[in-house]
Image (cartoon, rainbow over all chains, first blue to last red; front, top):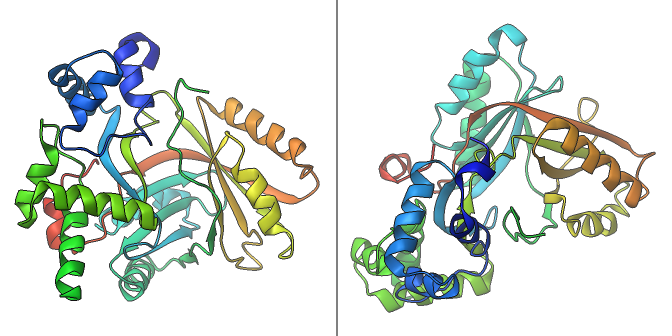
Length: 155
Length: 172
């Protein structure tokens, strides 16, 4: 699974060079191919393979938090013996995307994203009611980072 | 008319949430799904980028699978009057992937600034955090690093109703 072993130069360029600079034109994969000295069919095949192997999440838009709906970061302090069960319950909501265990008294952290604030609050309240554990609501107040993607081999 | 336009923009956003199809003319497929033409889809994406609704458009990688197994959430309690200045500086550091201000929830949670830091392992993340704090003269501030342990779920955000989301091509 170590990235170096299975990804060749073309894979790496496809993953690294088009995180922000993606050609918005009718045939984007042909435009990408031109920039990496390849052809459209190869680029499409490679991207599909990278997606299938789990390296590529998707090619597409990353939305600004709160731009389209409401979202929040939530945390819970879950007793160790209940963690897996509570995590499974939380992951079960379609509104929950990231859900992580972290090393802290607040050991379960997840992001809730929904159409509006009422829907977000509803999910938090529902989780609190079903688990009997308080849910700490930490909505975004200000974002400071311009998303430049995730540099892999470019530094 | 404004409402029509708004609805079309919403439909295009919804159709693209699972990602662009990996085909020769991907915007045609998006256009067909929502009942418009290719050029309208491309123009809409451009407009949403300019407006900042889309903060970037392109390849979205799964860093965990690419060997960046560890991430640490560095949280700090910074004075309200200087948090913005410090945050802007931290956000420029290549080690910082996200930098957000959030409300404190005292007494359990005294922190108001969150920075996400990725690394190949825990030691690597800690090293980046230490360097970041020293470089910005923040060693003496109240701070804490919450290392990731288990990832239960990760995929792109879905903003639409549950019915539609269930059909979307989401990365689980």
